[in-house]
Length: 302
View 1: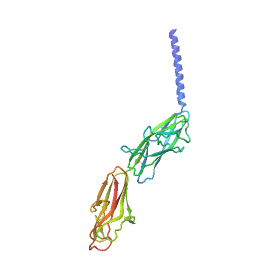
View 2: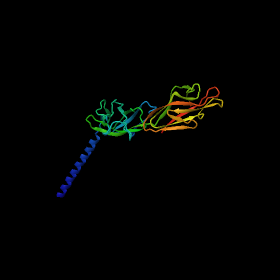
View 3: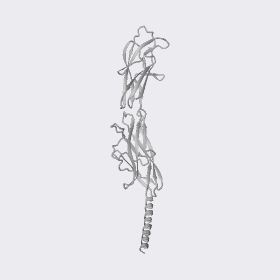
View 4: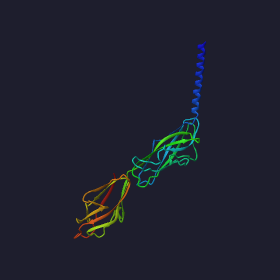
């Protein structure tokens, strides 16, 4: 009899436990159960400081609710204590940016470390449903930004009105500033058949500064190369007549008898001007007429 009583008690306890487990599962399924899919762990914006006017891109974020009740809330972005701004190792530069929910127009930028209280319409994700959100990231690169990869990890959350977080997902914001450089001519020159042309006027022996400069804009260091089609001679077309001449590029004497180049080493963006000076050789006894040469200036990032 004692043995039988114990078995009934154990069976009753087992049945009661089974009922509690089923009730707990039903309660969990009835809640909002949200996950976020940002498409990629990195949201990358590629930017060429010498060509692009803006560094803006839209990113889609999927909100997936596997629960039995809707998920309602607003986005909140946190930096988890990191200072605001994209950065690169070894640099103190912080590149500002803005984040905006394109659906509600809400500003999500975590300027103080979090986007704080966000106003505007709530996002509604129905039970067992899916919604797409679009977040615009607009980076505001400073002038003369050195090339490199600038990043910051932002924690994007959908937060209920009572402060509960339905879901949160870290995304690394990335600005890839390209290594780029351009070279050009400014000052007094004309174009003939699309080619910049500098007139030397009447040729006479001596040195003269031209009112023309070669400029280089670069996101870091660069190499300038100079070649002379006639290897340092002004030639009269269709004849063997020529006049020796030399070139000074800024403070650099350029050897025109062979390909010439020089490097400017820098970890910072640069804007450099190189005024042109020519040295005309002996013109005594030279045949009258037009003398010319073609110089080619090229630049490459290093």
